[in-house]
Figure 1 (cartoon, rainbow, N blue to C red):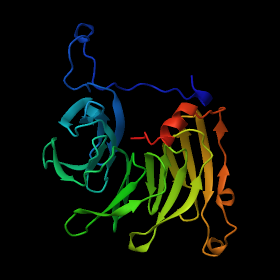
Figure 2: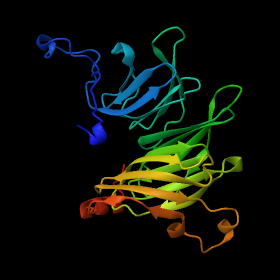
Figure 3: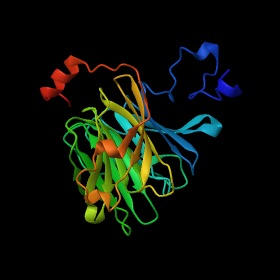
Length: 290
């Protein structure tokens, strides 16, 4: 029994196990390797799963069935994001590619529409910043760079607008909230960026309180105005979960050189004596981070 009487209940498992005598049979709908990522299309009610077996599967959860399965990449599928406005599926992989997929009209199958750019290192994370007027796609890769693309209004084509540089090692996770982007890295830091005019991104805050690679991020605005501040949740492989209240500088105090990370961030988290592995540090300093 959970706290305050709440009790989780398993509704279904995908794919379904039909009979005890069929357990040993090979299930065509089951991933052949571990599942690496999930994304949900709220409009179509489809759950997408990506796997180390290089495939992406689309599940109709209400009907507990797999409606499509396709070979997406030549390497592990590391992340999936969905554009809730048009249903486009974005995937990235350790093969260095970012791909865009679209459902065939009137069918359950998916077709590849675009391979954005063949990158020189594995792509680990994706984030989509979408509004009625703009749509930006961000990808984080093992070379520490964050590439970003903008969707053209008329053609729907994504054009590369540059990259963000600042992390020393691999970018492992990304979160986008309107014009704010958060990135977590193997260099143990979290960077918070703001998209300005002419595709320029300013780095507002660098949080360096973790003692291991930052693997997962989540964020939410405390008010309707995301420009005032965020609650940021971060998890590292140093056995640490932290919660941050980030206050962004106003136009007045942004010109004050005394405003720093200590003033802009407040740690509200919980820590379990994390220790940074000396062998991990040695490996990264030698440049073996791809």
